[in-house]
Amino acid sequence: MSRFHRHEDGTGHGHADLGEGRTSRHSHGGAPPAAEGSCGRGLSVSAAVPDHSGYGTGAGRVEVLEAIFDENDRLAAANRADFDAAHVRVVNLMSSPGAGKTMLLRRTLQRLAGKVRVGIVEGDIETSLDADRLQGFGAAIALVNTGQGFGGECHLDAPMVRSALPRLPLQDLDLVVVENVGNLVCPAEFGIGEHARAMVYSVTEGEDKPLKYPVMFRSVNLVVINKIDLLPHLDFDLGLFLKNLGEVNPGVATITVSARTGEGVDAWCAWLSDVAPFPAGP
Image (cartoon, rainbow, N blue to C red; front, side):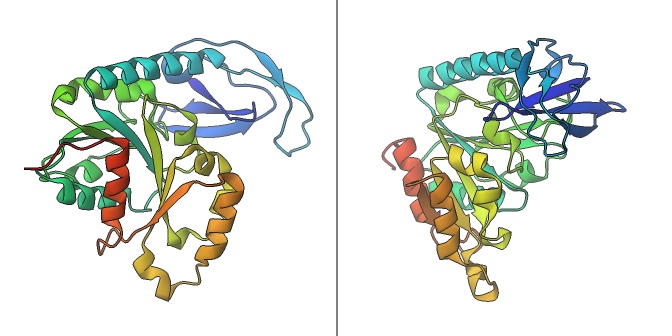
């Protein structure tokens, strides 16, 4: 089975499944994969787009699976309608692997325990390791392993999130945080019905990533700059990072935190409160 992702510049990349669909390879430009459709939906249309691969293959036709995105948009709207009907607000939390999303969520759940009713959609390709780390803080947790029934995708999309909703008591929640699969590219391309998007960025990743992965940084409402407790031990130039971030997303909100020490977590919780006005505590 093959899949296709559309990038915001009109280009795309195909995932050609090998074996049982657990391993994929990317092909940019040139001949498209024999499309069955993303997640096996079998819907496709063709469009001519220029080849931006840089491999000298020239302009070519690629099979752009626009209907896949139409289907995702339809289910994202359905998710949003369910969230709104339940009066619950949803944040799509993204990052590269290891940036600290799960640790930040642990701190968040500790701060909000007994005050805010929180649900988590935990996205991972395999294992329940991150979901297990969030247990015991009073949150309802629904795990989505993309390696089980979703072809091992490197992101969560609207159908995957929708599959998790029956396992969340939406009517009893104030806030849902979707911890997306760790990846700086694909998660930004798929709406899931969220009300806001945030990303966690670790200072160990260097200053250049906004320029190298602009789609992710451009798509979010907030960048949480994590692991600032490591700054004395790094050559990370925070000013340069913020300059690069401003080039791709001028005026985007930022918060500096250390999920390890708890520094800045109150500011993050305050931002969440702006997204999802919390009920008065006891």
